[in-house]
Length: 124
Image (cartoon, rainbow, N blue to C red; front, side, top):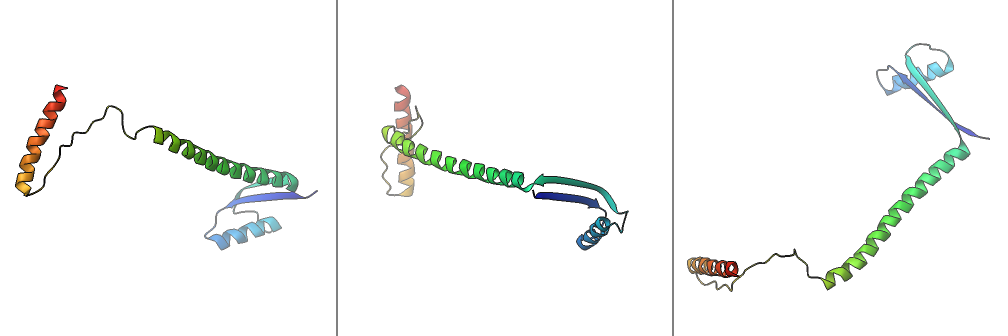
């Protein structure tokens, strides 16, 4: 049976090349200092492949299920929105008919019509 072994060495080094040289010397047995800690994990290749493919499959399944749910909700949402008007409940807007001739006249007419519409709305 084949196994996968991962060795992690933590050492003090000036740069990447120096760290690689220290790790190589340590593993060859030529150097006993410079390495702070070493961790080693071993797993069979069969188990590692099962874990990798299962995780990949789960991520893909999750992605496609989200897409399918979104598509289905949009289909139902379009049906739902066509039956109901879009907007907030109990929200009303008063917009009187506007005539825009002169800017000053427009502003004065707008103020009069707006005030009249608001008063009429409040009376209801």
